[in-house]
Amino acid sequence: MATAQHKKSKTKKPSAQKKPVAKPKKSASAPKPKKSPSLALMKFPRPSATYQASAKAQPVMSPRLQAAVDKSEITDVLTCFARGIDRLDENLLRSVLHHDATLDFGPGVYQGTASDFVHWVLGVFQGVRSSHHMISNVRIELEGDSALVEAYFHTHLRIEKPVGREDVFLGGRNLDRFERRPTGAAGVWKIAHRKQVLDWARTEAASDIFYHQNPDAIWSSRTKTDLSYQMANFPGSQSNGKLPAFLGRHYETKSVKF
Image 1 (spheres, rainbow, N blue to C red):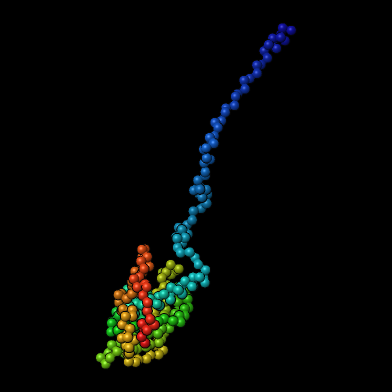
Image 2 (image 1 turned 30 degrees about the vertical axis):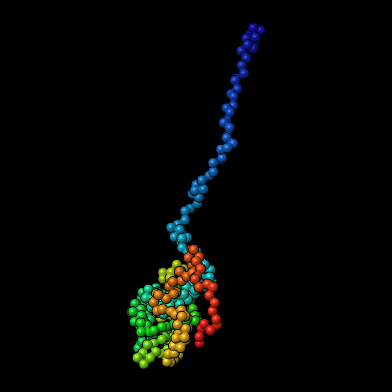
C-alpha cells in the first residue's frame, strides 16, 4: 500500500502552457505597401534595341492614309518650286531639289544639275519684270519611296525689251520623278529629275492700263519684300490682337477701275 501511495505522490504536475505572444497591431493609418511596378515588369523580357528605336519613330499609318500624306507633301513641293521662282528665293528652290537632281528643259534651253539650274534660272528671271506660275491637275503615282508626278502649269511672264514690254503666256506640264530620302515615312520628298514639256505659248504686246488706273492696288514684289513673307505680322496675328487702322473706311464701287 505504501508503495502505491508513493507512486500516487509522484504524479506529474501539469506543464505550464506558453502564453501566446501578442502581435503588434497595425496602425490603421499606415497604408499597405504597394508592389513596385518595375519588379513586376522584370518578369517579362525587355524589348530589344530595334523595337525601342522603332517605337520612337513616327506612328504606322494605314496604306491609304500614308498615300494621302505622301501626295500632300509632294504637292507642297510643287507649289514651293513655283513660289521659289516667282519670288527669286534661292534657298526655297534648293530645299525642294535633291542635291543630285537633274533637270531637262530641252538641249537649247537647259539640261544639267540642280545646283547649276538654280544659278541659271535666277539669272534668267532677273531679266523678267514679273512672273506668275500656277500649278494644277496634279497626278501622282506612288511607287514606295519614289513617285511619278505630272503637274500642269500656266505661266505669265512680263518681259522688258528695247522695243517695249511683252507678255509671254506658257502652258505645259512638269514631269517629275520624286524620291523620298531617307526611305520610310520619316523621309522627305524632293524632286530627283524634272522634264518640262510645253503645250502652248503666246506672246503679245503688254498693256499697263489697269496698273496705271489702279496705282494704289497692292502689287507683288520679286524678292522677300513681298507681303507673303510678312504674313506673321498681319493684323490679328500678334498677341495684343491689334486691329488694322483702315477699319471704318467706306468705298464706292468705282474705287477699282477697268
